[in-house]
Image (cartoon, helix red, strand yellow):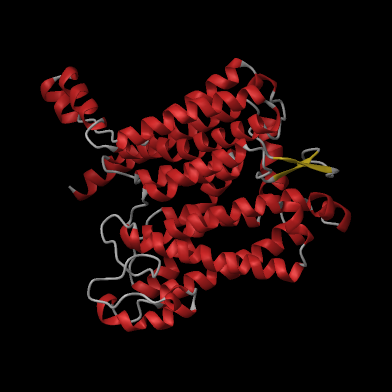
Length: 426
């Protein structure tokens, strides 16, 4: 399939990528307005029309142009409602066309010494497969960003299917992970996919039953994290552990979504075990995606727990956890870590632009994470091959303990800051 794509004229490929971007922007607009938690609106022409409006026409569904026709619904949705979705479709199309040029034709994520015609030709198939995965990721992040802007929350309908799509693609053995320059920290002579064990490339133990157990544990914890968990400290203090546990388990099974989660969990258990028996590229890809899901979501989840305890207020929404889990499953744990640490820098630009447009000083964290992910894709060679990979190689098994230590230090600093504020402002 990808070989047929590469065989097409380059100009035609760019046109098709642009058209796919327009459709992806349309899909993002449908999700942004139709599947919002608190204020769903019938703005997208791909959904039902409002009761006060005439039926939608086929021309309304033409990307970009259809929004000019939908201006007739301004009395329902507000003047200028059509401008943002129109710009989202144009921006998604242009952005994906640029990304296609950057990733597959210029080899922007390869080390500089390998951005030569021979290497680009040899890697084009892998780079193209990776670009298609990034296309899915970009569309999902566009939807998540603007829903978060509007409602300060991220719907599960974006992040849960996104994570499952990532895991399935990885299990199919499709090349989807960013390149590691090899030998690490030297003049590169080749590139390898940045799998879960990069830059060490010692994946032997993951082919054993222990590797399977880790994969099943990650999947099980993720499914449990998606459940409706309601632990009540008040009930625990006043009525004891037994009543608190009863309240907790009653919440897990209160809504019908638990049946969907159980089905997802069981299918995942069977699928992961089956792919493990296959071994090779499918299992290596699946393990990489699962570890990316665990690290991406786990970092935000751990910070959320520690910061909430230290500040005594909810520090982050759980939508940020599921968003970063989806991103990690798509691009791997190394890129997820880079994206997380870049997000505060991206936040500076986002806050300034948003304030100029809306005069709103509050910006949710999801757009920061998405912007940090885009920066990671664009500056991957400089950030990972030029710096992080060599440091990971030096730290080795100390990396986990370093992260735990930094998390504890952050919690202590936030706790002290809360006490200082209480003394100053009380």
